[in-house]
Structure formats: structure tokens, C-alpha cells
Image (cartoon, rainbow, N blue to C red; front, side):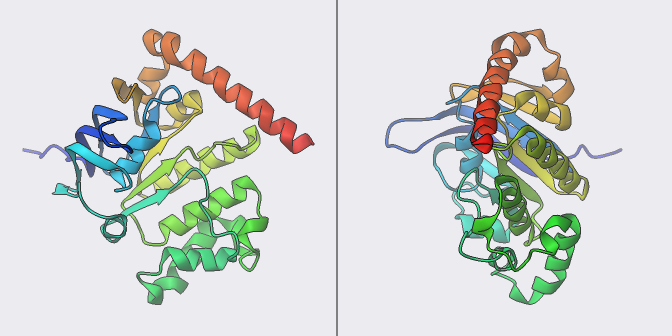
Length: 258
């Protein structure tokens, strides 16, 4: 008799927010199983990034629980979560601009400095575009290159779960595609990924399962392919979200052209 797999990370009935008495999340739940790539999509202001930050101990959880491999980590600090196997890549300000690429990776392994050489070699293989530029200041890199540095730094501690907050935001369409390909490659190494993403259609194409949030609560959930083809999700969310992404991409392209 086989045992049903258990979630490696789970959120149950979260109420959470930044200001006293004001919840951004309302009875919000999520499960991620070992080796999965889980997407979180929804309109602006739906609470997507708040959910991710709640999982990483950056937002006050007023009700509900977060468990990691069956252990309650609801009140754990971010440094504890890093030790326990959770990595986090924020949407903005995700590198140390005055440090080199190599020094950024060192910051990612400050808890285990003796393992730096071994882990850095693995990151150079996973992100070969960074290897020859390891002495370059992170502040001089493009947005896509910074995103690669941020991912590499988060992976230095060998997390079992990697939280990505809108990794394609602000990138040109070409760089977005590269980021999605890289995300899937990381996932195939065995790292469970929970990803908040503005490009809903692309997210649903690569993720195993996904959640649609609306006004801080679960609106829909299912497989990536199932949600991408669900008439309700298409009508209520994908059309609007696609327009938002297109507008941001056009603005980004105009900025690059100038």
C-alpha cells in the first residue's frame, strides 16, 4: 500500500497584512509538493506577493498556519527559514549593486562559508553567463542578468523550496523567455518552486499547478494547462492580465529604445 505524497510547503487559511486590522490575505491556502513548480497568478492587488512574503516570514500572519515538510514554521524568522531550506528572490532590490557577482553569491552562503567553492562551481554551470563576469559589479548588470544573480544567490544554500516574486517583471519579452526557461531548469534539478508571476499565460504554460488569487483569497486552482483552458479563468483573468503584461512590455521596450 503506497503512501500519498505530502506537501513540502503548505499554507492553511492565512489571514495576513501589513497594517493593524487590515488584511490583504483572507483565508488563503496553498500546497506545493516535492519537485513541483507552482504558479500564483491574479489581478493587481490580489495579494500574490503578500502570500509569498507570508510564506517567508516577511508579513504578519494573523490567522492560519504555514508548514514546511510537516513542521509548523508560521512564526519563524526569515533566517530560520533559510536554514530550514527556503530561498526567496524578491521582485526588486534583489542584488547588492556595490558587490561583484561573486560577492553576491558569497552573501547567499554566509551561513556556510566553507562550502562556497563547491556551491559557486555549481552556480557557474547553471548560470554560465555569470561565470566569466564574476568580478563585475552587480549594479552594472541588466535587469535579466540581475535576476540570474539573485536566483543564483538564493540557490547557494541548496533550498528545497524556492520562492520567486514576479521574476519576469520589467524584462523585455526575450529576457522574460530566458527567465522562464531558467526557472524550469532549476525546477528540474529537484527544487520545488512557488512563483508569483504577472505573465499569467506563460506562467500557466510551464507550471505543474497554479492558484488564481482575487481580493486576497483563492478564486481557482488546478493544473497549469487546465486553468489556461478554463473558460471562466480566460474570461475573468487572462484577458485583463495579458493586456497589463503587454502594456508593461511596450513600456519596457520604449525605455530600452530611448
